[in-house]
Image (tube, rainbow, N blue to C red; front, side, top):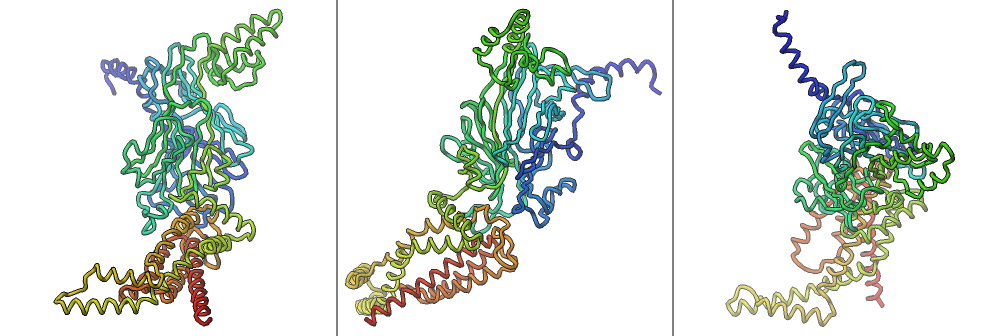
Length: 630
């Protein structure tokens, strides 16, 4: 039993600690907090009341359904459902503090912020003052849900039913009828206190990359790491895009910019979570990308500095007045005939019109309502979010140059038309494998003259090889007669080029055409590699997904065999015979090995292209024989 003389000091200590204890009741949001679901025909969006981000974005299109369990080892059991078979989940985080599309106040200054906290079911009301809301975000991330229906949801922080604060952050998500993979987002900061407020709005998109994930293998230089998480933004006609590995080494100026971007995003190879800042954001914000050691990747946009005057005499939103009293802006808007959102700016001309329309005793009421509306203190922002596949037509429909998020590499000017052709071929045939074959054939036909010239030049060089060997043998013999180990290089080059000139052969004729066609082949490669249209689309038999590797490696082995045949029949323009034989065996083996871990759609493209090269070689040989016979 505690002695009576010690009770008084103990009670005094508890009273001093009450404000801190109230704030220290850290809320565990997951698992447990029930999200609010907004569902369109294509996407199910789950809005979290803890942080007001999206805790889940599931694609309802059957093309994107997961067929295998892909749960990373580090994910807790209660969150593993995100990676189970079924509708594809685009949110790769599970802790509420990393939900994408979060908004919070930054650099807030309202003198000292006073909060009155009343916990549900408790009789006590605790008032505390703090210097900054940053710590309060960490201890109480609960937002109050003040409105919801099947089309929209509005949340407010801090929860106005529990906390009386001089400043609030409200956020409304709404479905967009004509854009079934997008949501409109309206954010507002309300000053309902008696002091001026200064702050910035910070909008954050997060994703997570498994630290144990492989980095992409031998083809990472050309195609980018497969499904490695990235962050990006687009500003002043330039896209800044870094995957998690690049972000670790990027300098601050390489991953940030001053100004408000057209869009910012986190993405993977086939899917993207993007925000497009709209009205209210201005041009003087900032944007940055960064990654954390736990694998979280983030894209962050921060507004320019904002200021709100004291709200004395102004109206307040209904969710505040219903809990704490005061004049409701919704009631004043109704009286004035305003149908705008209560955080929208109102043209002064409208107030003049309302005054003229008021009659008799209503004039005083109208004047009072006008005064309260004019004194309300609110700053609003509008934006749009997109969550879905990186299909170029979907992204173009969103606007804001979001289609630049599809990375075609350096040769995007070639890659985009190639993608259009492939999609047209699919619309015509109904088959993505056939579309890849048709695209490869068309590109090969376009480059047929260039490749034909290259092969003819190589063939001509091959026919001159015996004469070239004879020149080398003669000059070597002459050099030895003079007591030298090898012929004079200048003399050898002189006679070699004289031989080429007599026969009209160009030593660069075999290399230059191949060099000129490389941009087309790389662009074609990147087009197929980054096409979400191929996701979960079957090739044949056991290959059920063109974006995944052949599980039994039959296609890569077949490619190796065809490449060996190609090397065997290709003209030999000269050089060391032992080296040529080594390449004849080494190249097919190397390509087969690389293709074992790359998408089967790419392997199909390279296989078809190799077969067409063999056909072209045989065709040119046939033409050559007919010319000789004539």
